[in-house]
Length: 127
Length: 127
Length: 127
Length: 127
Image 1 (cartoon, each protein chain N blue to C red):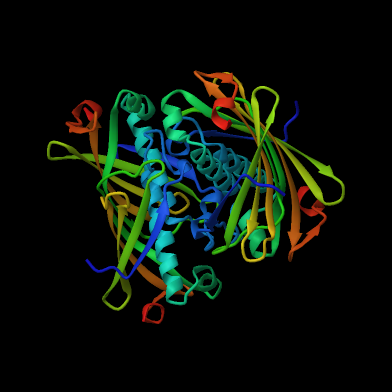
Image 2: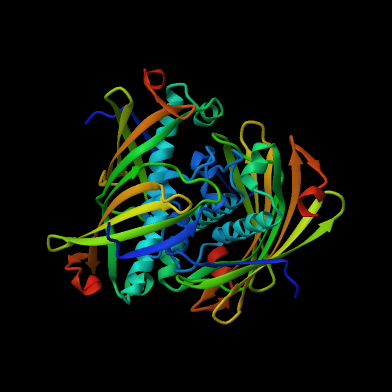
């Protein structure tokens, strides 16, 4: 499987819940951070874009939870993008545990780009 | 639309991000808290279940982000459940802004119940 | 003890950590939310102030952790303020468990108000 | 100044708030993660300790906020410990921005170690 970008991180204990595993919502943090770091490799800074009134926003997420990360696990977030129609960008984002390459989650995050509140073609960000 | 349970909450400023709106991941916190409060109305305490080795886990989420919540917004989380096959429980969870009943997100959270790590029929929790 | 404001909340399971108790950092969320709700009763909205370039910032915190909150606990955050010198506002903030009025944390949060990056007298906010 | 341990991290956008800077509570996450990573270098795993009923808990924190971290900043958390009396361990924890070594926060975190709910001498952890 081809990925355009990958980022390694490590579970922090405050991200784990009563069950001793990473809380479901936290994976969305990991996914967001990975997308923003990917945008930087394309020359875009999320905070700077926001100041200019350009805001990539999440339109839809689908996450399949395959296996939980636990305290201390190292993991890698991988992504690739795909254009859908004129306005949408699909981020396919998978997380793997580094010790054994086990698939942790499989996600699709559909984003659109707003400029002054209106959707615009995202080409200028991704091309 | 019929809902089995609803819970009112209010956006807290620390839940808002650089864009001044609630961060995408935070909605999963709202959804989880609503499910756990719903379980309590059925007589089940999530923390107590965890101690007994019974752990409802999220298998898949789908969230459509319709409109963002902002600082200070009051909102209501509504849910209904549906059994799918022997092992899955679908939570249909919608969030509405209270001031104008505007739909904020529409979510499907598919859960399974594990007992000592193995999926079991969730009937004892939901019937 | 006199308090100027109080706010009731309930522990949410995602705020609890591996030990099954509320994570230390989360109390700062509770304290911040309480201060912001208090400011609203004085006619000030934190997000609106930020847009105007007026930003109350935390200068120092001291928190004594007396007893942990657990999953499902109801608690009340109480605060009173005191001016210190020309520029500082001391927020004395205590959290009590509601079931038995047990003291959970005792905090002092020292804030200053910045306008375009410079400290200004906070009178216009608190008088 | 001597430090026993240091850990480099990077601000993630979801940690920033409406003001575009790292939220005050998030620094406690950074501090906790640094302490737990430090404990690992001493051969102790926080999650494993918790399972054995040994729980280092925070007794008091003092944090001086000197300068805020912003989106994308790299920073380093440094710590040294000091025993206080029979039961307390003082963690002196400072955070610096990496680009210019600017001091961001200065913190003192006082911890005690509980075994089955009772404070015990922390020597076995730190010696």
